[in-house]
Image 1 (cartoon, rainbow, N blue to C red):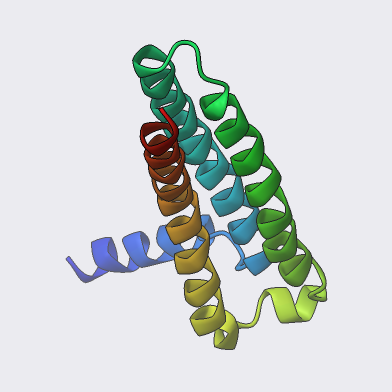
Image 2: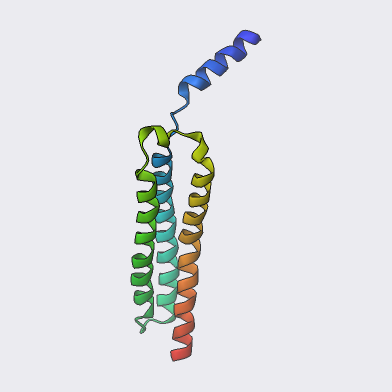
Length: 126
């Protein structure tokens, strides 16, 4: 039984990928942009069905795209500045979790908040 556990432990160590905060943040940014885009398309299409004659959903789409790209680039730039040694430093785990949380908060709430704002404006102006 001990030999079996040792074999499992060896295989897990061999298959463990080296830690690279740059790649992890880059992957999170890519997934967050996919979620963001899906939400934006879903919300914009819903707004287009309600107000087919209004340009506000298109304006919302432009504002949202213009707003998320600089935010994602700042996250990416911050993590890509790390050297190879820094990118493998486990001490950066707290900073990574903080930035990842903010990235996902922005990716999910920004489309919801701004689409809601533009729908409110459309309601007020109509």
